[in-house]
Image 1 (tube, rainbow, N blue to C red):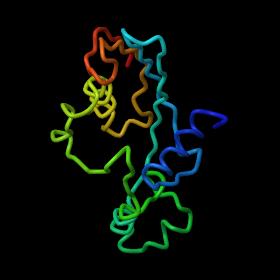
Image 2 (tube, rainbow, N blue to C red; image 1 turned 90 degrees about the vertical axis):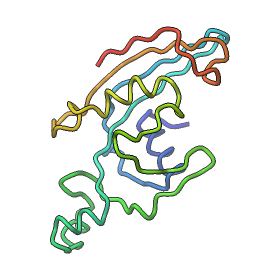
Image 3 (cartoon, rainbow, N blue to C red; image 1 turned 30 degrees about the vertical axis):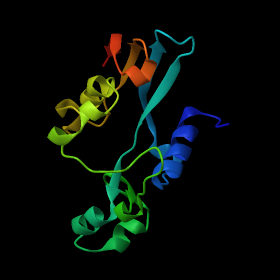
Image 4 (cartoon, rainbow, N blue to C red; image 1 turned 180 degrees about the vertical axis):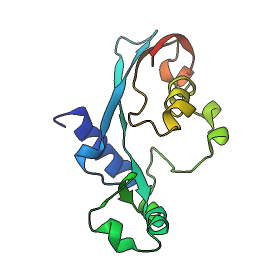
Length: 156
């Protein structure tokens, strides 16, 4: 059992994507609660933000001098990770998308609501603090398998 949600996020990221970040790289940005019409149990998801840069990008910024960034392990944009080390698992297949090509229709219905806010222009304009939000989504019959939101509230 993980002592905090941040510990759980760190463990899940390492298990599911082979990405290890220091615990202090995870900034809590909110929670999403989920309820289901035909289930008695609910679910709470903790949202975290981590600034990362790919090693290749750091080398390019430092004029090819990887040692400058690797001495600390932290670059201006956050922790440094190797893009080639990222791998999938039975739960995810990592792929990179431009903003306009994120396959929201193939994702859970709530993703098109909260993820678009999180990745919004406001969030991407160099603001020091990531967008913070709390929300609640109530799914109709079939739960998350039915993928139909009946009600939701999102405080951004």
